[in-house]
Image (tube, rainbow, N blue to C red; front, top):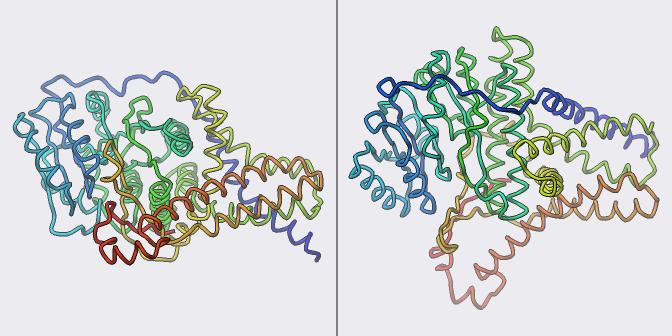
Length: 507
C-alpha cells in the first residue's frame, strides 16, 4: 500500500466519523423553530406564589460578588417568600465583601444568610448540597457569580411549576460583553449554538436536555428524588439533570427569558472553563450510559442523550483531520470528487449553517454574522488540542479538581483573577505551521478548492496559539523570568505578592 493510499483510507475513515456529528447538526438545524413563545404558564396569585431559595455559590469572587448579590436583592418577588443563600467557600477578601453585602440585604428586610463550610469538599456541588439542607424554599434558583438576573426573572419562570411534573426551568444565557473583542464574539456564537438551537430543539422534541449550572430554577423535590447533588464528575449540573429526567421529571426551557452574564475575556479562562465542561461531560457519559441504555425510554431519547453526552468525543477526530488534511491537499491524493465534496460539506458546512442560524435567531445583523460565524468555527478548531486532552482525561483519569472560571466584572485590572497555563502552546503553534506549509504547497499545486479549509484551520490554530503565546510571554515578563536581574532583586516575593491569583489550567 502506497503512502497516498494509506492517507486516503485514514482520511476517509475520519471524515466518516465526523460526518455522523455533522449529520446530527443538520438534523438539529432542520428541526429548529424560533418564533414567539407562549407564556410558561398562568401566573400565580400573589398569595399562591411558592417559596423560593436563591443560591449563590461563590469561591474567591471579589470582582463580581457584590454585583450578583445586589442583582438578586432587586428580584421582583414577595420578600416573605424569598430567601437568599450566599454559599461562600472563599479564602480571600471576597468574604468581607459578602458579609457587608448580606448585612445590607438583611437591613433592608430580605431574608439573606451566608453559608460557609470548613472545607471545599465536593466543590460547587458540595456547596449546593450543603446549602440545600438549610434551605426553606420549595423552589431553588441558582446563579453563578458572573450572572446579573433581571428583576422579573422569577416572575417569568415560576409559573411553569404549576405543572407538578416539572422539575426544572432553564433560562437562556445572554452575553453582556459579547462585542468586547473577537474572542468574546466567537465565544458568544459558540454558546448561542448550544442555547439557541440545541436546547430549543431538544425541548421542543421532548428529548432530554440539561441544566447549565446557573440561571435556572429547580423544584427541590426533583433534586432530592434524583439523589441530590453529587461530585464524582466535574459537571454536577449535567449529571443531576440526566438523573432527574431518568427519574421521570420534566424539564422546561425558556429561550426567550435571558439572564445576562459575562463570557471570559481571556483565552486562558475560556480554556479552563471548556476543559472542565468537556472532561465532565465524558465523565457523565461513563457514569450514566448504562442507566440510559437500560431505561424504559423511546429509542430517539436514548440516541439523542448519547449524542449529547459524547459530543466532545469529536475533538480527537478534529486533531486527526488536522494531521491528514494538509497531506490530502498537497500529495495529490485522488478520490471521487462528488463523494469527497459531500463528505466534507457535511462535516464543515453543517457547522457553518448551525452557527449562522443561531446568530440570525438572536438578531445579529449580517455584517456581524460574517465575522462571528467563521470566528466561532476557527476558535473551535483551535481549541481542539486542549479539548482532546480533556476528553482523554475524562476517560482515563480521576475526577479532578473543580477549577472555577476567573471572573472579571468591572474591577480594576490589578484586582482581577487570571488562569495560568503551565507552558507555551507548542502543539497549537506547530499545527499552525503545518497548515501554513500546506497553504503554500496547495497554491503551488493549484489546489484552489482546499484553500478555504486550510485557511480556516490555520486561522484557528494560529489564533489560539498566538493568544496563548502572547499571554505566556507577558506573564514571564511580569514575573521577571525574562529579566534575571529584576528577578534576583524580587526573589521569592514575586510569587508571594503577585497581584493575581494563580490557578492551574490542565490542558
